[in-house]
Image (cartoon, rainbow, N blue to C red):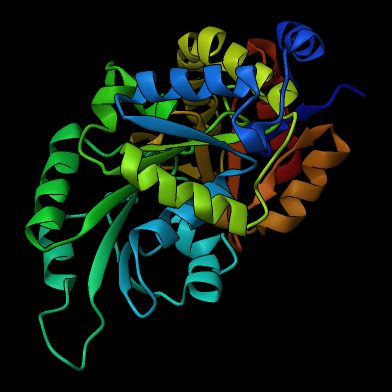
Length: 343
């Protein structure tokens, strides 16, 4: 049976060029700053994001956690969107490891309103924690892969700095955001103090993420990477795939977006399926099967029997993600499988 895996863009397999680059990677001890492939990857990431420095980390979760720790002190408060990945899916790392408190603000499809953010900032008072960091997510996973407009990012940055906060972007899929907006990544992250982005999602590298920001701040971020167990040695073997990802995979993301839109439109025509088509901006789709009187878990199980893999996101909500290993013909097969699963 042919498997059509729509669970996530994390299931992407490395390209032949990545495997070849990993095999031939020039390596050294990264702990001493002597791995030339890692150094090249970090320099490229800094250039692409327009930041002074960048750092290779094993995962996006680690990258977000060490960024929060490097921006805050124990007892501080961090403002986040109420269904942001940092708050919802990262094992309360900032609380457990950084002793910082989350203050959540609901967004519209994951996009924060600057006025609501400003209203959530704690005033100066001995009874209150210090609000020191704003985290934004772009694209927003649970919002449906939605993109925060550039003007909103600029205003959020002004609100944050006016109130003594830094801004960190969870940009796990920031290249998807840049593709949707039609601008370079540096423009998307211009109004941030730091950013994390993943190499291992739509860019298809087997492992790794990047953190970028000011050079002075990066020194502190590197200290936290070491503390969290992210210090690596001859990791240029991994970084080599990241270099291929950044130089060959970013320009094809529009294909994933086009397939996601087609899948969303075709599914919306099936009886019993509801899709917010306006929210399908990049490569993530949420479909609701409540009108079919089905639950997400049973529908996903029925789909799996037909070779289509996807994940429940709520009781009647299913998440689908397109990526480089999904072809146009797979969309038609997946739609037919949904029709059978709902019958």
